[in-house]
Amino acid sequence: MAIILDGKTTARTWRHETQQRVAQLASNAKIIPGLAVVLVGHDPASELYVRMKARQAEKVGIHSVIRRLPETATQDELLAVIAALNNDLTIDGILVQLPLPAQIDEAAVLLAVAPAKDVDGFHPYNLGQLWSGRGELVPATAAGIMKLLQHYQIDVAGKNAVVLGRSLIVGRPIAGLLLAADATVTIVHSHSQQVPTLTRNADIVIAALGQANYVTADFIKPGAIIVDVGTNRVNGKLIGDVDYAAVAPIAGYITPVPGGVGPMTVAALLSQTTDLAEKRAQRG
Image (tube, rainbow, N blue to C red; front, side, top):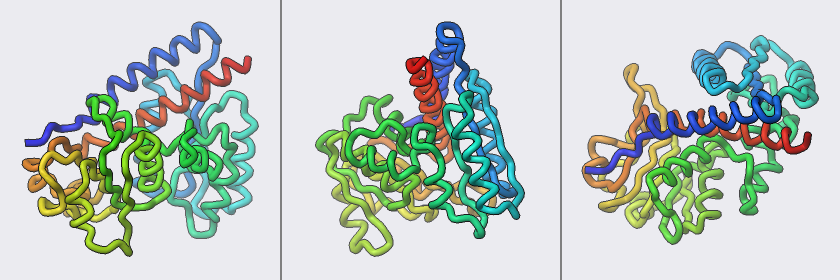
């Protein structure tokens, strides 16, 4: 049976480390890290994520600000909010909650966030830094996955890794981080052929397709490391992209859903916000 990569417990430890760093900043530099989350509309899932992020931020001592705009907000109105946050010296990190309403150009909004405050790592500058091997601000889910692997002392160097999915939020960023850590990386997407053959040769499988139970037992080799990023609602239950019951007896390591990657994502966001506040302290 696979060893469970417990994201819930690992994230708790990581948040405690962040809390200590925040306390040290407050004591030594009189600086409180500031995180601003911008939410447009009233999508229930987005509302839940935003509240969770704000609650966890406050628990570790980070000053959390939520800027809410109505579903009918124009792009110019949203850009004005972002511009104000870019210029707010008390805000270290800015996160625009996705998805955005149809009338707003998502790419233009992400481009408007100052790269130095882009705590979600979606700005083209930060994505370019990631792929050049010099990434400091990286998408939180990818950062959380790498931290989870490190916590369990899993060295990815030299391993064959297959990433299922090529989104800018998870697939491409985690591929870039794995490559920077000297893994051999294959990205699988909707046009890829013979996917089970690719994954059966993988030492590490990162499943981020958004398709419930897509990865079954015949997709993996014995002892493989399985990281399930999927969050699919099926009959009111949260299901990953991996058929956990079938895959866990074969895998060497596996993340559960829930309790795997999800908590690590929020912990990564808090850690990166604190990184930015520490840089502010260094600048004086």
